[in-house]
Amino acid sequence: MRILAGGDAPTSPVVDDAAVERLYAWPGGGGVRVNFVSTVDGAATGADGLSGSINNAADGRAFAAQRRLCDAVVVGAGTAATEGYHPLPRLRSGRRRLLVVVSATGRVPEPLRGPSPDEEPVVLLTRGSADAARLAEAAETLGEDRVWVHGEREVDLAAGLERLRDNGFGKVLCEGGPSLLGSMLAADLVDELALTYVPTLVGGDLKRIVNAGPLHDRLLLKHLLEEDGTLLTLWTVRRSA
Image 1 (cartoon, rainbow, N blue to C red):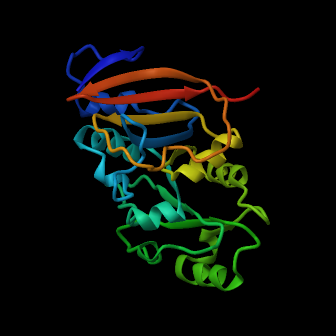
Image 2 (image 1 turned 90 degrees about the horizontal axis):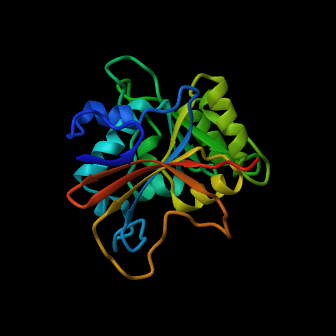
């Protein structure tokens, strides 16, 4: 891996794992970063509908570094179910992380309902109008303190992120899907976008990384890395005034 652009370029021409962590470190005050992978023709998944079929070793290095560095992973329930999410393993350092599942219906994907002692807690972020039986089931399986109800008709993402910050989880990594990213961009909640372009064309009518109405967000490049044709970018999102 080598760096092509960015102000934090390491002195060595080789970007090792330690350098990857430095390049993907959150700003001192934390923030909300979204991570996605895309083909060159803009698809966020392969023909099977999974992002796992288009990512590669280079993307995996950046993804793993961000998972290690973040305080919380936020993901939509649909993406968590489709991509086969499991609770996060506990770090050897003992630093705690949360996996936050955003679900308007209150449904928690089956693999996330019972973290083991070696896994991090799972939090459900949902809305007050979600099905009462599902909320009760989530409270029973995750614990009442792990069911966060913010908003009535829609999930209040801003309130959920504020609660994370208030509890010391300020470095947030959002992993999609496209609808969740669209909602977060529309609400002006995203600080950074980490986007990997894999050297692949898939064609078809597949999802892009953002599912939303018209957006006018401007991005500022922080770094550009390359490995075997894979381009790894990190952008600052210019938040609305």
